[in-house]
Length: 67
Image (cartoon, rainbow, N blue to C red):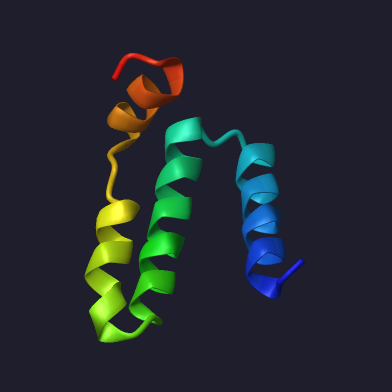
């Protein structure tokens, strides 16, 4: 596993252990994805951000099949 995946898993475990909601974990991951997108070449940044720019509510609807 890469260090990024390990750090995300650690952060998720810490936040879940502290009683954070699924929404808070999702928003944390989304901010991490946004940061990772800014590390890409400028021509890829906007596409990457658009790919990970789903609200938690939209994500929940999609996950449950209500899209």
